[in-house]
Length: 425
Image 1 (spheres, rainbow, N blue to C red):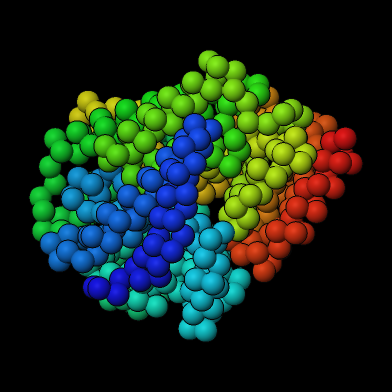
Image 2: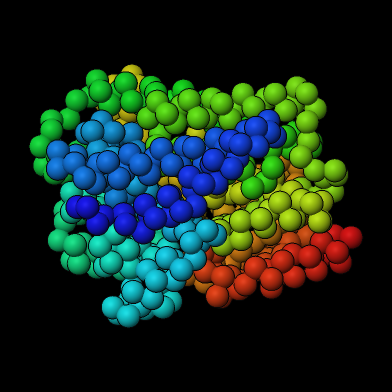
């Protein structure tokens, strides 16, 4: 137990806390959002550290197809594993490399998504606590179906695999909600020894709805010209929601972010001299270059307004009328999270991209072809032809969004700079 999250603790003590102290010492109102993000991340991780050392607690290691509310209802401390690598890729690359290489040396193929190789390496290295369990869904990622059974066998802890629908809509959410009711809730009762309390679940959902209302409003603010929030920080409320929706801290953090964004709009504060270009980023963003989006804004006048997989809420808050409506809304929210949108067929993915492009008044698109994702690599040809037919400038970049050894920051920036100084000039 005492060795769990060893490398994560080292990262928090060696980087996150000193960085927070530095930002606090600056006492600069323009750094409010950066300070808020670091403070929230540290609080979430320290909650995990405490739970890992408490035999009366359970740590829920959860795949992105589910949000945290149900796990909080059972007094578990959740960690969305797909957000876990990005804590290290820009700030502690040596840990990222170590865990990926551990997974590969243990037999996991190198063409499996780097996210799944990283978390598998973490599991094999003893980073996760013994009082943990896994919950994963079946789609859309092939890497998930490879990695989670390996981690379950390596750690010998409970795991549940939920069947995810391949369609998107009310029928799919209703079907997925039944899976949660008949499989996940009994599983959580078994691993925690606690009886499911629908009233407690409703209370937590109501808490998360307050944050979700703010999240939607924040996302709407990004449609304004110029954008009131730097590109590097736009995805923070969404990642925070994925990580801790239903926790009062998440609601308060989102409230402060919303308050600061609204203040910037009212006072006409902008973070860049000129917003020359408004970019829709399709698929995953690079996590290994901490200053990348600031560089785009400062040097090229190009601001990433929204990312389809990081900051675009498209649902209403969850209906708390009864248990079935709560589970359907909860299921749909999980299906709406990050890579789950890749369950769309390519035509629907293109249509969704176009609606987002128009809503946020973008003038160009960047599509990342993450080498570990068969879905986006297969869809790219059709997307390229559609954007050409519509006369929309689009840049397609092949990379590993976690691993700078596939495409370095230098070469990534070269491609971006060439695009904006030639095609967009």
